[in-house]
Image (tube, rainbow, N blue to C red; front, side, top):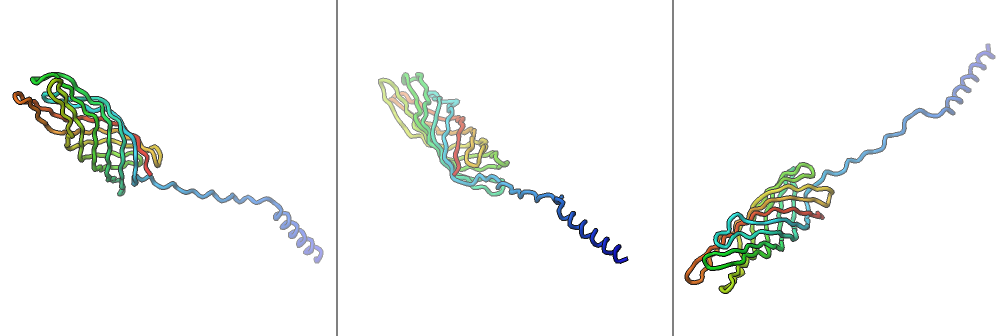
Length: 211
């Protein structure tokens, strides 16, 4: 009987030793996953822009139109999905219109333009739909051969809207439409009066870098 019990004990020890030598079947732990932080529009940015501008009515001196290109600087602050900010830009412009009126032939040119605007928008992840409004100024030069030339800084308002999309955390592109009514200015040769009306429709695209 003792021999039987001893044999059973030895068999149990041998089985335990063999089981300890077998490879484990336990799966390795899953790698940790860290979700990237949500994109935010908050921050300062600089950029370039370019496009076209022209008016629908220029009164007696026509409405100049042409291309423009320049730089942009601004700041956004995001609260939930709402984004508010300030933006300013300067554009070199090549807007021209030539013709004649009761005073004589004329050349009407806009050489530069600036805007300073507030922006408000709604963010859908990396897309931003925005409206904007503020101040606009333009340098307008009217020349009448044989009579006179006048270069005036025309001030007015501006408003519009657009869409901006962030391709990376730092780089975004935008497209916008702005309307800038500068009002009327009168000219006279002492006998005949003429009026200039400068109301510009502005279509621009831009590329921004956010810090």
